[in-house]
Length: 373
Image (cartoon, rainbow, N blue to C red; front, side, top):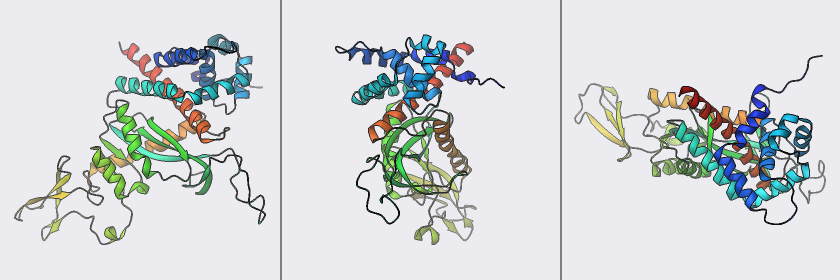
């Protein structure tokens, strides 16, 4: 019978390296400073280590995390203890109460990752993805029965998700994670968690602002057709970010108002863009018109990166980075399945998953820098 083995990348030494990151060390010190009274319990380093193990080994519940550490001598040595699941639940509650400390840690991790990865965040892709709730959202107790009065997760709501290879699209009950992903590294640089009913378009501004606060020089933002609405273009224009969004077939598009200028010599050619003027320049193909060029105000139909150009097509192909990023978070880092209820608990679960994912990337970046030196 073949012996089961843990993947080499998910060993105890990796937990040690994550705990030794300066940003995580600061979080541990701040959490320890909060324990001015009460039972002795376990140190914050041990409890943060338990949270890292939970994501590294993709374990959905604290009970199994506690059992793994209890039976794993190397992990016990790294963490320095074998906390019970009840200690983990208490620590999670404390993290929710002092979520600003975890937010500062995440800001510092992303900022240093951006500093060590030149160009990170220059090109972003934004999208939302479903997080099905750990609860039943049906309105009726049974088919054609009375209305349900109590819900297992009252914070969750009904939303819509697209189809994928393993399931059809349609309604789902739960939450959404909205994320901005760097298309070069496929790592999330900003994110937020909401209930499923909230529109994705309203979170573009917050994600861009968070990415810039963490040291990203955002230049372009790629989004899918669902973001093709005027407020999104206005939001990006205010922040001097160039949109890469395909058009929906609205009435103006059907009438061909999105096409480049044209004359008897043919369709005019793109000749550059001016972000300060928020306009694109077009030239007559034969220069036979007077004037031979003209400026077109940038808007939804005529963005600063025209959809006819090779640059637009290359940038839009990078949008799949956000889909792969979501897939890794859910399947490789344990973002799903959810085994917590309530929006604040789901947000904490996602933040701890992001901390493990980004901390591992930061550790690899540091190791690569040392190797190059």
